[in-house]
Length: 417
Image 1 (cartoon, one colour):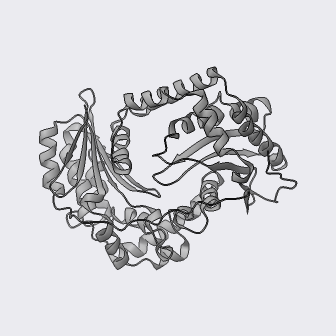
Image 2 (spheres, helix red, strand yellow):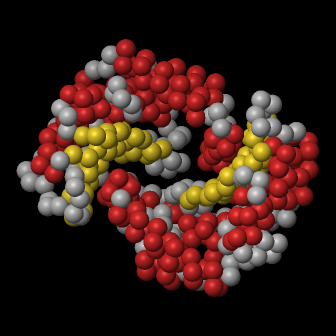
Image 3 (cartoon, helix red, strand yellow):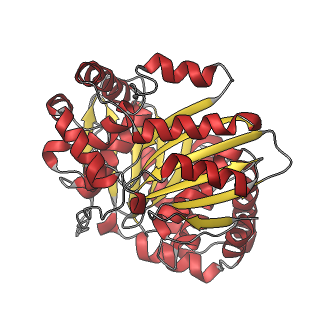
């Protein structure tokens, strides 16, 4: 049973009660991420996420917050994306009031001490270095940079060294005042609880969240008339490849065929690209094709790592399979991909934190919620002609984007069908 409530201040609350579990999960989602930032303040959404764990009036330092949840075996974390920021706590069901108290405390009462801000700058700079040192992570950052260029959609979520260093306490306070508002926030609860009792506790914790309107993000400019490439020189043991195209956002009527197409291309071990690149040619260990669907952007991309002398071979095979997808897809492949997606969806929602996230993100970004059964119905509706239509729209030579991380730069690299 799914229940939605809106508090007097405009805060939306989603309840997903489950009797056959011992856990309780609470998620807070705020509709702000790196796409809302200005160039001089790149990384501030992510910076603020870090700072909410650095001390409150009630729990004045990071240790006070972590000990409160560690003593009951709780799980807690936060993350920032391009479109939203999330905070969550998961505990054994009897500690639900504690979870709500802690998550509301960090959300509403963080102190943002100057000394903690300066300390956290070093932590975030090390996080940025960590990502750059890991090609499988950094290639995704570079792919979005190639795709969208010098605009918020193309900027790194964590920001750059100079922008992180320039962030001040007033910047963080202004960000909170502009975006951490009731109308811009969704609270999502899943687990073993009683709705009426939990609603009273939520009101005690969250009615102090102020109302107001948040600034809108910049419209993403999408323009591409020819293939694009980006080479990042790094001394690695293998070459890392990202090859993809622009796609569809979460509101597009072809989003589900788009998902099925990506799955049969490279979404699992029986997919076309996994079978060709790894099983048949023995070129790669990791191969996966993913889609990113956001409120205003979307793309499909295949990621793999190969011997530095085999980059051209791998790119050629990926392009061949993209082209083949425009020519024909068997019903057997489609059924396999659809069944895989349905099975993975249901397995992914066994944990209460995953279920809370599943419902909360939908409410935040789309303003409506589909249940797992309704999602499955949408997947089942996908037809062969829908998938072929998607493939023929997105797989065109002028829409290709290639990123390679390697050293030296690969030679004779052709980017055409």
